[in-house]
Image 1 (cartoon, rainbow, N blue to C red):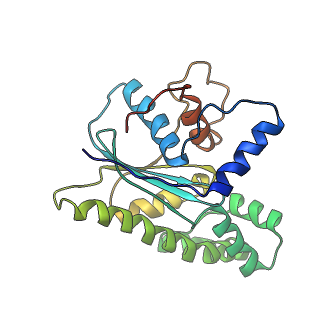
Image 2 (image 1 turned 90 degrees about the vertical axis):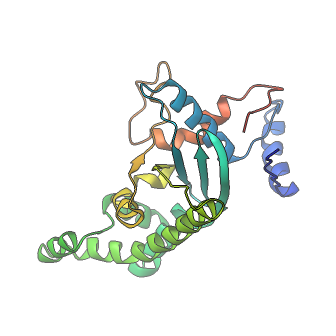
Length: 232
C-alpha cells in the first residue's frame, strides 16, 4: 500500500477555521492546496477529448507558496511546497527598481522575462531600460524556481530511472508572468502549458482566460463533498 503523509500547523488551520466561524459558516472539510489542484486536474483530464495516460507536473505559483504535484496516470507520486512564489518576483523588482509593492506588481504584469538573446538585444536596441531592469530582477528568481522544479523531477526519476515527465502545467496567479512558460520549456526540454481549470465546467464561458488559472485551487476544493474520501 502506498500512502502520503501530510501535516499542517495547528495555528494555520485554526486561523482559517476562525474566519468561517465568524461568518457563522459550518466547516465540513479541510484540504491541502496541492490536493485541490489535483482534483481540478483529474476532472479536466477525465472530461478532455483525448484523455492521455501520461505523467504531468503541475506547478501552482501562488502569492506566498508554490505547490508542485507530479501525477502519474492521475495518481500522486510527488507533492511538495516551496516558498519561491509570486511575491518573490515582486520583492525582487522592489529591490532592484526601488519601488513600492503596488508599482512592482504593475511592472511584473507589464513586462516579460527575457529568455532569448534575440529578445534581450531587441529590448536593448529599443532602449527599453525599464523592461531590461524588470527582466534582470526576476531572472534570478526564475532560476531559483527552476532549481526547485528540477529537484522535484529528479526525486521522481530517482525512484525509477525509466520515468519521464511528459508535460508541465502552470497555474496560479503568477503563472501569467510573461515568458515564464517559455523559460521553463527551454530549460526542462518538455512541453509547458498554462492550465485552464474551467475549460470543461458548465457555465464557465464568462471567466477570462487570464484569470482562469488563478481559480485552480478554489475549483478543486469546490469539487469536494462532505464526508467524501478523495482517491489519491
